[in-house]
Length: 131
Image (spheres, rainbow, N blue to C red):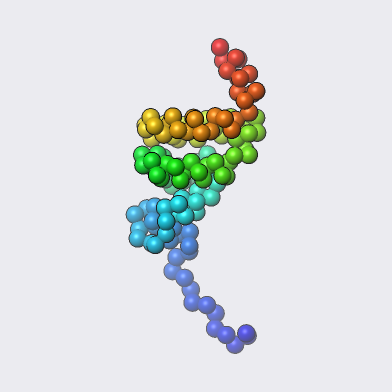
């Protein structure tokens, strides 16, 4: 009501608490929740945001964290990856981040998982043009 005191201020937002988990803090949040908060969609990975790119790249070394990262990318970018030229550009950009981690299994898994989502006709055309 009008006489009720305002709620107490919070020292950190939910997002900041979740980021604390990824940055070595001790907040009680799962890695999956933290990654989804830190990287609400994979398009944020594709723009120069050092923290998000670093989190994504670091996740490539650990198979379970990599799986979570790829699940987030798939869920948030599945439709965009299918959108012709833009999808291929996004794929190449994300693949660059995966390659930067220098983990062969991560590159193989990324290609196996995400190439089928691309516009296959356009991809074949581009491959022919590259020859």
